[in-house]
Each structure stands twice: as C-alpha cells, then as structure tokens.
Length: 230
Image 1: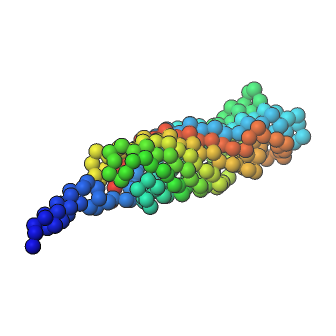
Image 2: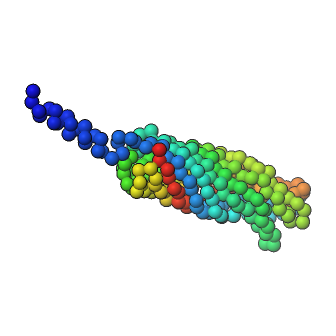
Image 3: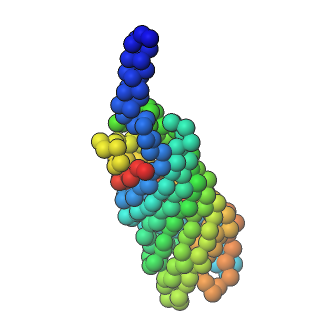
C-alpha cells in the first residue's frame, strides 16, 4: 500500500479545516442602527378653508435622530434577506400662508420593512459593499398642536405603504462581530393623509384641498450599525 493517497487525503482534510469561515459559516446577522434622518413632507397652494381663497400650506416631519434594528439571513453567499424596523422621534412642522408657523409635538415616524440586499465578496470577506431594496409600511403617529385660530388641532395616526432603497459598506474584523455604514431612502405615498395634514390647521372649519405638489413624504437616513453574526 502506497503512502501517497493517504498523505494527500490528510493534507486535503487539514486544508478544509483550516479554511477560515467555511468550517462554521455564520449566515445570520443582527444589527443595531443609530443615525440621523432628514425628512420632507407635502406642500400646496390650493388649500381653501370654508370657501376662502386658496392659501399656501407646507407640512413636513422635522429632521431628527433615528435608530433601528434588523435581522438578516444570507440565502446565498451574496444575497441577504432581512426584516428591518426603524423609529424617528420627530415633530410635524406647519407653515400656512406668510404668518402661521407651528410645530405639532410627539410625532413618531416608524418603518417596518422586508428587504433584500446584494453584497460583494464572500461570507468570510473582511470588507463588503451592499445595495438593498425593500417593501413595507411607514407609520406616522398622532400629533396635537394649536391651529390658525388658536383652537386645538390634531392629526390621527396613519400607516402607509412604502419602499426603501439603500447603499452601504460592512466590515468584519472579528468572525462574530462587525460594523456597517449605510445610506437609506424611504419614499412614502401619503395618499389622503396629505389632505388631512394640509387641512389640520383650520379644523373645525370645513376645508378643501384641490391639489398638492406631491403626495410623497421622504426620509433620508445616514446611520452606523453594530453587527452580531451567528
């Protein structure tokens, strides 16, 4: 019996065991995000309370600190599917005509998304770039503020369909831990909520909105994250 095949087999087995990241692949990641979200809302020149002449109204969430969590699984070495939840503590800012400006306190803007991301490199790469896309909802909380006539005005909480899009980079100096830097854009179609927001400062007066410049509110998030792999 020759020793050649035995030695070759032992060398092959040793190489497999020594290959980093392949003996125990860590395909699941959990991340904690901390960042800042710039926000935009809606505006219209065609808001008419109680049959009065149309006036300009702008409504937008205030840009502010945000945080979030996501859990993802690599279905292949480069494709990751994940569940994402984020929260932005904000205020709803109103401008009506040239004289009225007000902030509604207590607005929470929350995203709940399912995402898919494409990554460069392999599971054991130290640095990976990624691009993601997702579908889900944006939740806007209730807001109370003082209206144009000094009366208490309020918007109701609303949940609306949204998409999310992002780019970023991940680093893994340790097999179990890593970091992430990312940019994410979330446009949300407000639908009839845009009319409710535009008319809120005039309640309880009747109000009509004959057009808005856009029905989309935008969130632009810049965030860093700590990653745990298992």
